[in-house]
Image (cartoon, rainbow, N blue to C red; front, top):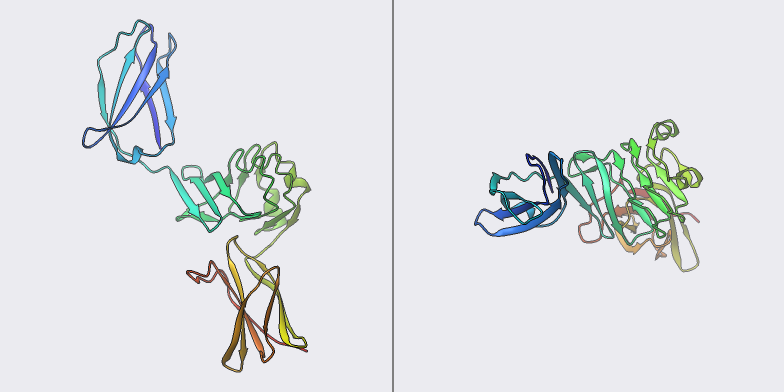
Length: 276
């Protein structure tokens, strides 16, 4: 990402040109900005791929007659202003200078906002981030959030549950901008914790039926692992809150992994006894 602000001295201007070159002298990109008569500064922000290789900026002015000023060269030091978070179904971009989530792309109806991304605390949800999103029905919000900007959840009509990891008092201290009426009508569950809130296992005629209620980031995998004394009897994925294990199971461990590939625990496992 690049942010440019340069002083001008001219009476009548037409265009201001930027040319970006890598260390080998190859042009990375070029941009143009219209400049009005009497302006004495010009600024431009750009968030695009390729600038991480930029080493030199060349800029010049062109008046309305097509006359160009002498080109000026400036060295570039690229500073990474953005940080990314990715899970199986969701990707996010955060502006590390503000701590705000500025973009979310997800195919999930349940969104998890982490409290930090690559070591930087997430403190805000930016403007229009979830606007017109009719897919999301629930969201997990960490207590690190201090602001929700204008229209962050505008027309997010199917959002019905907000799991907030802080207290009701802390939620009340969050600065919430306009266009977020859905945050008032949606059910809020305060003091939520990432983990296994409820779990049970009982014998049926031919198997052991396991039920579990888990709050975890979307994309996580929930499994029930059965044991008879110290011998594993089976493992079953928990789907829609239930799983089935063999009849000879005596104890069940509920495990939450970030995904089956890495098997990184999301929370502490829970061991329960099978009952009649």
